[in-house]
Length: 144
Image (cartoon, rainbow, N blue to C red; front, top):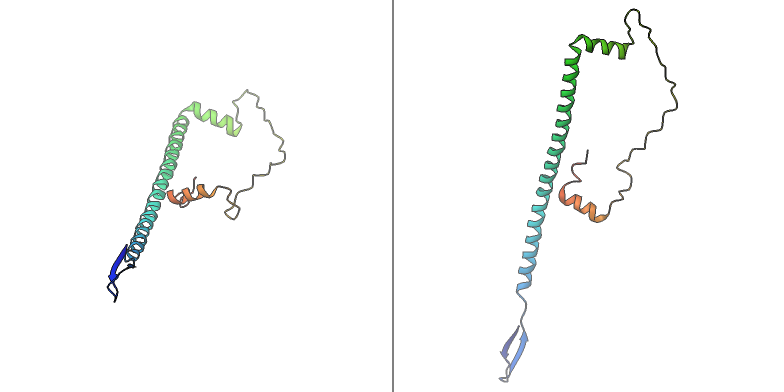
């Protein structure tokens, strides 16, 4: 936009006007960036907490299933047949007149366990994948 002004001789001279909007645009962009960042970080925490709740619920389901199995074992041990089965399997007991056999296994070399990955090692995921994990809060709550 230009401004028209008269000089001393009466001629009209066009002068460019100063852009007064640029500080406002910069302020608006900074404000928008601040609001965006303020929205992203709590959003990340909410997603991480939801992931943590899901992991905890999965653990709870596993514990409930294990409790059911243990309750069924307790119920089976309340009978004479269950006690006899346990005595035969774990203690090697036999009834009078029966012949018991014991099989011994030869222990071999123990296979080396796979090396655990430490946090110090290089993360071979792509930058895009790491950024997505950052936005969704997966970096806050690890997979279990």
